Length: 184
Image 1 (tube, rainbow, N blue to C red):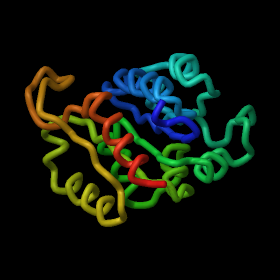
Image 2: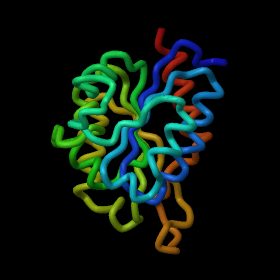
Image 3: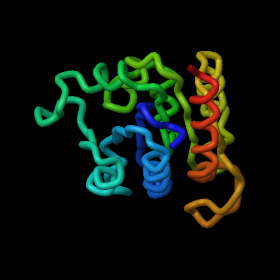
């Protein structure tokens, strides 16, 4: 169990690739990580919080202001505990919010509150991914120290083939392991 004692936050945005994140959360738990899942409001349209709760064995947070949150300021509390923060799938909308420093939901606010390394797995249509604005946002995030994994070329939700498919869970896991074993 290579991640024993490590805390990994997983931010899930609202894209069809959210279903793949369930396998990533499961793999992180198998590696011994304590996993906390944070979801944007639109993420729950693709995968329910109950799925992630069962896999992570932790409460799943979907609303920054939910009085049922286990922490008064979950973005600050979890951000402080994190050894790594993964955002997958990172939609074009989420990339824009991260690059602009917006903090209007739990996933984006936690990215600002944590000092842990940030690993981003973009996922969107090939046309969106190729747009100059998306590329500028990714470059901004790289300059700030974010690590980007993917996207990959393959079949997209539209049925098209192109560059925009989220990296596979195993690929993301390997990058997580690399980042956490390089870091004391």
